[in-house]
Amino acid sequence: MKPVQGFSLQPNPCVLGVLGCFFILFFVGCESNFKEVQKINFSQFAPAGEAEDFNLKYTDSGRITSVLESKKMLDYANVEFPYTEFPKGVLVTLYDNKGKKTFIQSNYAITFKGTDIIDLQNQVKISNEFGQVLETEQLYYDQKNEWFFTEKKFKFTDPKGVSFGEGIDFSKDFKRVNSQRINGEIDQTE
Image (cartoon, rainbow, N blue to C red; front, side, top):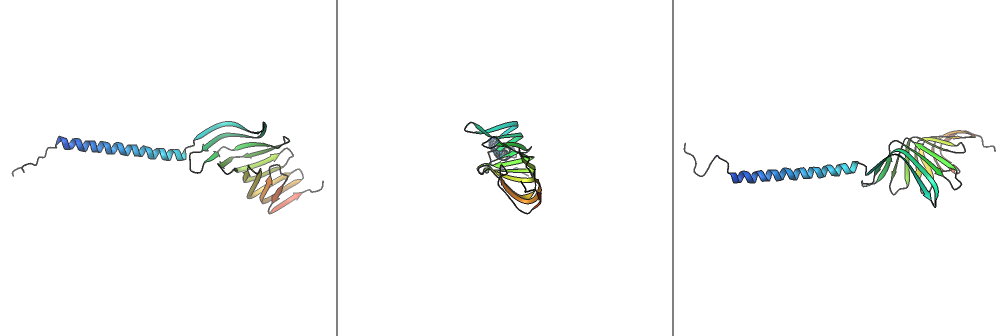
């Protein structure tokens, strides 16, 4: 057999160089895109800010209106619908104009920016200096209107008695209460 003229089985160094450059650029380009995709996914699921064992005081005209304490806060300001999460719970103390306190505890809380609503979950307990205590598994707090509400079952303890129900809304000082499906005994004589 005679070799075909002009055809060689030996690689052309010029062609190998071009192919080598092409593959290097291809893999570098893919690596760059892959890292960008990783950054996008990372920023969506990683908090923009994180705090541990903190105590935050809110004031209005020099007067403390509330104190927020938590073991851990995760701020997801970098997502499409920003929110702040308290995975280890919160303890909030609200002060009225006369300095009377209302205490709020929950094992988990989340608030979405722009809503002024805090979603309190898992063993939620609200109490005040007058001995009134409300316990439930989930409770929402409207910060703007200083109003609590839930459709979950609850237990309300008052120095006058104990009541149970499902669905309640009330002001932060328990002065206005609207409850649904309630049962229990409360002494209404004064």
